[in-house]
Length: 160
Image 1 (tube, rainbow, N blue to C red):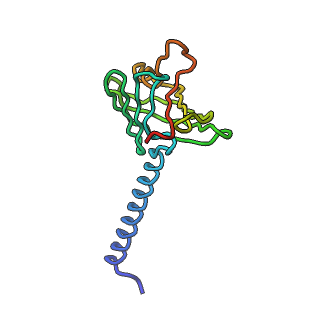
Image 2 (image 1 turned 90 degrees about the horizontal axis):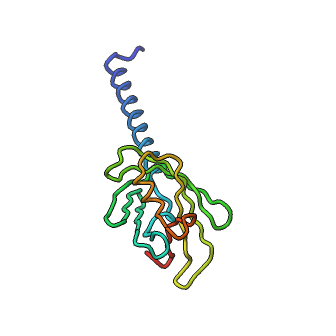
Image 3 (image 1 turned 120 degrees about the horizontal axis):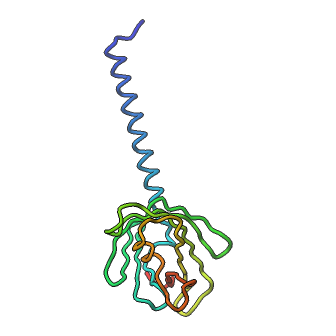
């Protein structure tokens, strides 16, 4: 028995709709996976030791940087892996900062060299891979006039 054309067409449309829905769900899940920020990277970070800069990184990549005024940006395509016993490394793309229209790519490193009173300190350092936006480069690598090689953000685990 040959199926009627109407039934076959309905089946085709149903299969096509299910395939499209699966593709959309998979794309959304993959997109969420690439913008989810590792827990160790999230939180409040302070600029060069005792400096005035502050950076707050949210779990979905929203970033606020205070350097005289607040700047807003977004991390995406965040990767992370453990390197050695106390170091995490990864790459990320960052967009935002009002005067910048394109994204920048950075390598990030978090180290935890030991404990101090108040909890384990973590140090976050960004290394520019490519970023045409110099104001954003300057925000991510806070300028420490005393020791330019030690440009990092610091956070204690006792901080929220």
